[in-house]
Image 1 (cartoon, rainbow, N blue to C red):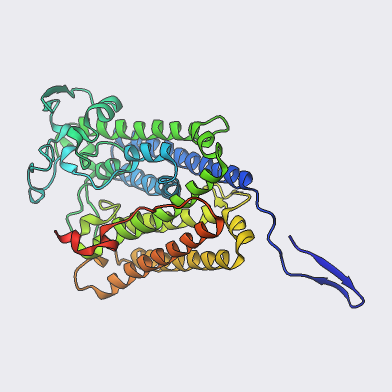
Image 2: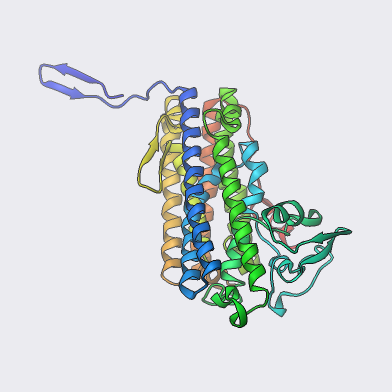
Amino acid sequence: MKLTLTTALGTVLLAATPALADKAAVLDNYADIALAKYSDSLITAQALLEAVNTLTETPSAEALEAAKAAWIISRVPYQQSEVYRFGNAIVDDWEGKVNAWPLDEGLIDYVDPSYGTATDENEYAVLNVIANPSFTLSGDTIDASAITPELLEGALHEADGVESNVATGYHAIEFLLWGQDLNGHGPGAGARPWTDYAQGDACTGGNCDRRAQYLTAATTLLVSDLEWMVAQWQDSGDARAQLTADENAGISAILTGMGSLSYGEQAGERMRLGVLLNDPEEEHDCFSDNTHNSHFYDALGIRNVYLGSYTRIDGTIVSGDSLSALVAAADAGVDSELKAKLDTTMLEMSEMKTAAEAGFAYDMMLERGNDAGEALIMGAVDALVDQTRSIERAVAVLGVDAIEFEGSDSLDNPDAVFQ
């Protein structure tokens, strides 16, 4: 709070002193922000479902573009929620249903011959559920004559225990809207024609009715999954209850989510790994060329959790007691340092985002020998790693239990990536 001192020379405003931080209030605000982020994710997913219904009922080039635009918008609040993953078991156990990647898209639909065939790692890599109303999976005959949310969730997702058999969530929907990106490191995203959803003789790609069923089922399932997660953060929800049951454990959960997303997941698996492999398939939103936005909003999610403030899709702001205030009360220098590092990360992410929006797509940045692209990505990677060191210092000054953040071979043991 601000203090004033009245003297003969008048009223003087003294330096701000950190307010006594209230851990319970910090946790309540963190949960309120989670509720807001997942609620926004649900609202935008419902809008996506409306656009998908329009596409499948009255297919047209305009309807496909509208569905793509709705998908892009839906990623903005969802990516900001990913900071809740690693510290909250309920979120981490659920996340694979809605945002799993990368995926073997041949499980779902037709693919270009260059994609290849089944492998020892995944015998269902080219199963093509859309083209097959019945198939054998792990020794069982599966009736897929109707493609329903239950089929996708119960039989197909991570079929045979293979993580790349992604049948549900944002990226399955993304593939069904854009199709494969066959441009390699060249410009351009996936170019699925709207006629893949056309009726009668105008249908391309075959099985347009079943493709529409799959897209509708996957989007409907996304909406129901988000409805479930919104309920977990309500006042009576299990995620909120688990978070607030133990104040110190709750603060640790916030820091775990920040550090693990910042370091191992985003800096490592989502960014540095792609630079090492120079592989356009290592971009997070690989069909739509939206990876720059996913990275930007992931980083923003870390920042707004630390500062205790989130701007909703309607422009309203959810804010309150923050982890920043808690750290400032313990060591103002560490708080200032971490806030500055978070700002630096957002500047690096903004540069990468601006370049991508100007036509220098993320998969183009990943091309071997593209020094400008590598500099843009690694500037953000280095900033994420640097801010993680300050998150570790925040852990120390708060005196919470030791936290082990998620790691990544791409950062910790790069040679292992090529073994």
